[in-house]
Length: 201
Image 1: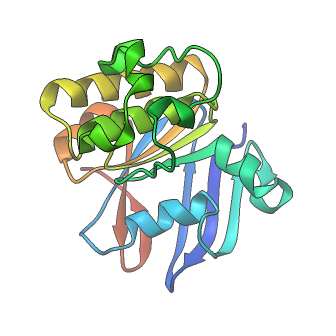
Image 2: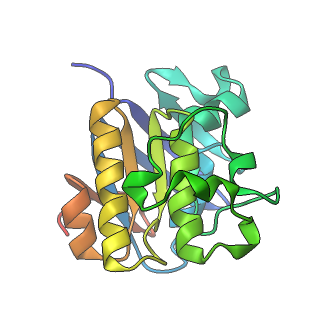
């Protein structure tokens, strides 16, 4: 039997855990839990953005064997509030055409927009498009539709599903909505004081 694409074992971060989970190639798994239970902290640790103990593997290779910038391109976190450092949207994108702008509801001219003019929802959708330009193997999605209306949320869900299947990628999707989790994911994890438990919605 093949190893899972992304595997987390005995991960402890910010005194939370240990956490264990696995996601197969092409699979989307939901992660739910009460506010403050540590969902965002877990995603940050998997992305190697916060100190942690335990192990994370991608395609059978341990996190510590891959330089941090390269790991974060392969295992990409899309946080609730994305970071933008430069004045123009396009300055945050690598060179080349971005094929995810139109499916997410943007014209190519959006790359010339001032970041300061973006709404929260526009930032969320553009942050996903920006992340996909690096062709990540695993997406860590922290409530990616929190600021989106129904139409934009549906578009984002579709883009993630198509990317995942076309690129044999994995996704770990944090959502407070059981209905959304049922739509986007085939397995479901619940964050509890005892760790991560797989179960029904």
